[in-house]
Length: 171
Image 1 (cartoon, rainbow, N blue to C red):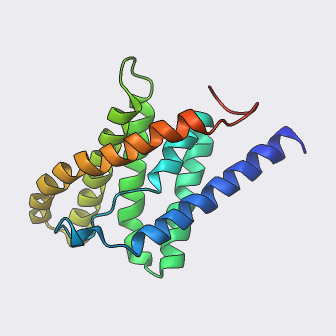
Image 2 (image 1 turned 180 degrees about the vertical axis):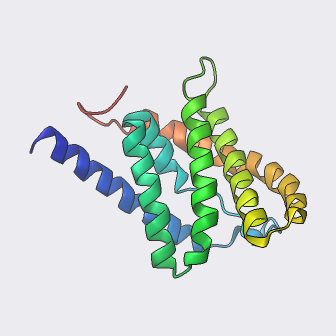
């Protein structure tokens, strides 16, 4: 198999994994434990973080975009696409930038990514609802992002350390 076909196949597998995690996570409402509507751990972000660490930023971004689009289609909720994309793109940009900061751990990067994702979703909601009043929801979401980002951060550290990518990935 050629180098480019191998990379494309790996991106497709990671996209499918991220989509499966996203769909499964949607079946378990976190709001039972933390009463914030729509709150999720963001476990599909594990795949994005892994791809950011092991692939090019372009490939990781493609995986994120495909997951968001396919997740909206599979979930039957295309109106949620604006929220997913806005949060996902902002989180991606923040994590990509922070991965280049010396001394910042993957744990911190994931917490910042969770906060950025929640911020992006609030910005999308403000745009969709044409009301800045929804911004009051940001403070509790940012507090929750410390917990959700910590969970995905800890899992990401284990994942990146324990799952090698082989000859075509970044180290």
